[in-house]
Image 1 (tube, rainbow, N blue to C red):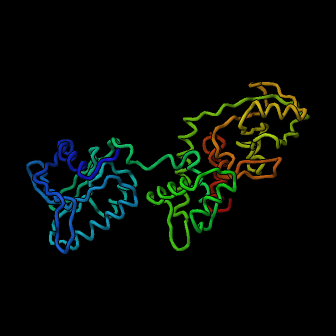
Image 2: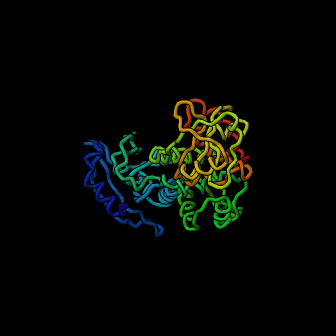
Length: 358
């Protein structure tokens, strides 16, 4: 559970020793200021036995990039309008992420988190920096799950289109029309999280990506995490050479992937044939019904059937009904983790994706 604001300040006060040489001299909660404004707290700090300073404190239970930017504006306005010109604007949160630290550094705002990290700038030449301590509050981190599995289809859809989507419903329909199988509520929740992370904007033009490269990198991180936890089972078969060109199946779910897909797209060469399938048993039956002889052979086999639970591989497949290939986004993700040759293919695909040419 996320800490409430009063719990954050109480925990900070109890654990002040971890912020040495900072000491708390006094704390006032919910302090009214001039012109009808108020702050969550005013804290007077001392640096060891030396100088003291007062801080205008705002407390946030979660520190998303969007929330941080909003709080920076709020603190700057409060400082400007208050009569206490010597006070230090200070933000206290459970945990401060690297991206949020950069935002605060840019605007010169001091901050402290409950994990023992802090950057303090105060009058009199006071500067204290301590970072690198681990996040003790995982539920305050960006939601990684939005870049994995079905939820990742929202980011994929946004990257597939160069123009903004006119509405949330348009994204929902775009995904489901391409075999994405997602609910409207999931689309809504994921979009909300993407907005909080400043990856997506909604304006009069519609819903669009703010930074395509950053969103693509987040999608890759989620893909890597997902594949580490969900290992696909690969079955390898030897096929007679005169039958290698006969792979065209429509009675079971399959899609060309990996370097074989890259070959079909003219991006690589390979002697192997690789398909994702929902069921290897069903695939075997259908292939053998086509008079193609399969012999299990992990050493010399040319055909790999990869049984996968990842529903994203069926999203936005390309090619004709009898020759389906994973789309550029899925292939990019596959190539990025297929070292050492894959990243070279991924470079070409990345350029297409970032230009909205997929």
